[in-house]
Image (tube, rainbow, N blue to C red):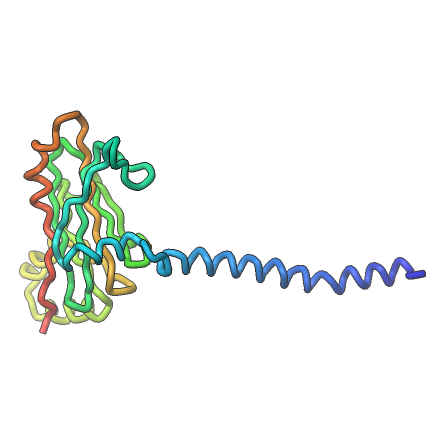
Length: 203
């Protein structure tokens, strides 16, 4: 018959195995969560890549009773997307809120990770001026501006928000909210003013 001390020793010996099992389960769970967006065959980026050229703003279909769109889609929200590949050069995003219709912009990588999200209430005068770059492009831009005088450098960087993307491919999403029924035509011009333009990298 086993003594109490022997039973305690066996239980203590099982503790490292228990911790190892828990750690393994947690690790597999985290790896699955992180890998799923990039492995998903129907991810948002891959759907956009099928029909959206690089550096072009495309208005997305609105949610309707017949076509509700993704979960939690807002029928009063107008969405526009722009796909980018920084291997082709830096990307400039511009948008201007009109003060009557809330505007937000988010920038996402091809794996779905969000690297920026902001509303017009957080920007100077409701204006977005975003430059998306790789680290190498950011360093080249800084070097090219070193020879500028203070006034010229301030002008080049005025209201500019620079985002250094950890990977080169992704998309930007513009979201414009209509507060009343029948405003689709009234905000059409504002949507048409969204800019998504590749810039020539510094030589």
